[in-house]
Length: 233
Image 1 (cartoon, rainbow, N blue to C red):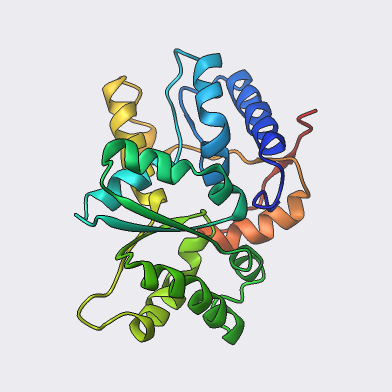
Image 2: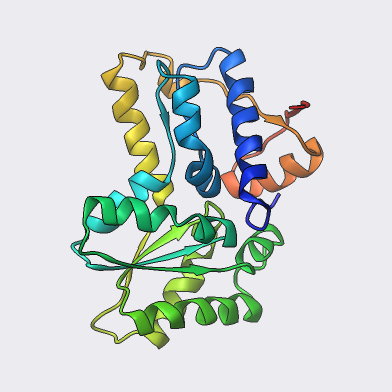
């Protein structure tokens, strides 16, 4: 971590190894809650596990952006996700007339990880990224990395200065749309049950559990006190 600057084939290998681990755990569905993993690995994962529902965050995010009625859609993402062109492919496959502008934001993830989302550096990084989209006329903006919603307040404040007051952009958090799609798919396959509302959580990490528990508690807004380190190789 972060995945954004890694070679796409390396990320693809990581994602497929994680899928294999989850399948061995007996899961009933997989959500690739990572934009770059969704971009480079989801098709192969679906081929390997054809009976298992597998969704990513790109398709729900693209659909949500198009549902705003905008024909000019911006994407803020990591360099790897931008390089993959996944959002452009998915959006234009749904609406060939849509114009998609993708911008890499390499400073965002380190700022979020360091809990520095309200700093001058964060506002400057937001302005640098949004200027491209404002120039392109993008008025629906997808936050194409699961870290980026933590920059939402900074981005919306910055947009007030860059965009006309009567034409502020709509920011799309694909995670929200993905959660809704997950619920729909589980219900469709009769995989929801009475335990769904009070189910347990298990955390497996390939890195340092202590660091994960610290950062995870911040990101999820709840304490995490158990994480098991595993090897995926």
